[in-house]
Amino acid sequence: MKLTIVLSTKHAETNWNALRLANLALKKGDEVTIFLLGEAVEYYKGSNKKFNIKQQIDTFLLSEKAKIIACGTCMKLRQQQSTQACPLGGLEDFYSLIATSDKVLTF
Image (tube, rainbow, N blue to C red):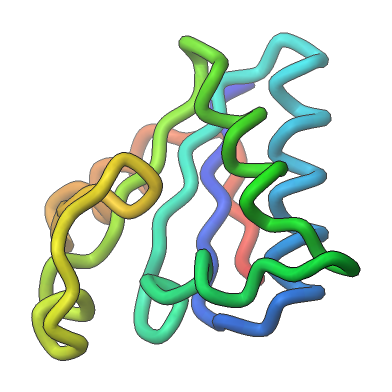
């Protein structure tokens, strides 16, 4: 299955749970793309001992079937640079994901 997960919050527990689901889907053999929208482009900053987002992302990015794309406009509004955990993308990427995915989940 081709799964797209849209993160639109920087709430640590919500994003931690979404990432745990993404990692489970990868283990099941699915292809998973995470699209970061709005304040979610700052999701990485919410990592802490209780909700270790960094660990989940590090695990996620080890898979060849995993991809992250971040809204470039949202990043520019926050004066944020593209990184491996938050790579620059755009609405064309978002549209393509929606059009080609078997399932789209939003958090």
